[in-house]
Length: 76
Image (cartoon, rainbow, N blue to C red; front, side, top):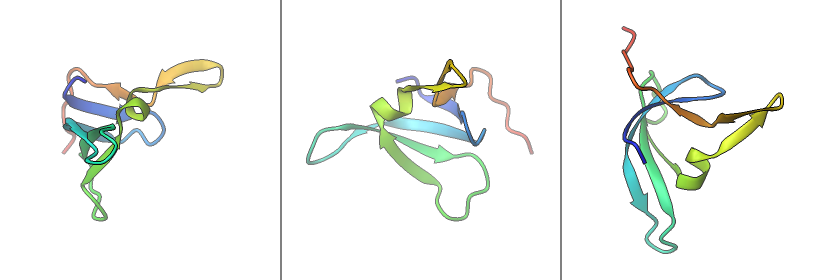
């Protein structure tokens, strides 16, 4: 799992992946990431690694749920 900034396919929001953790009971791998937009409800999130990395079919085209952003520049 490449650490860094990703963009969600639907919301277009940006997130910084902090690392991959393991669930204490199931040992399932979970991506730990933080929202990079103003989100007063919550800043840190987790999602199963397989779901984070999966590709979705939208209008007959396969796209990643989260796209890695090589040269992320925050907008102020």
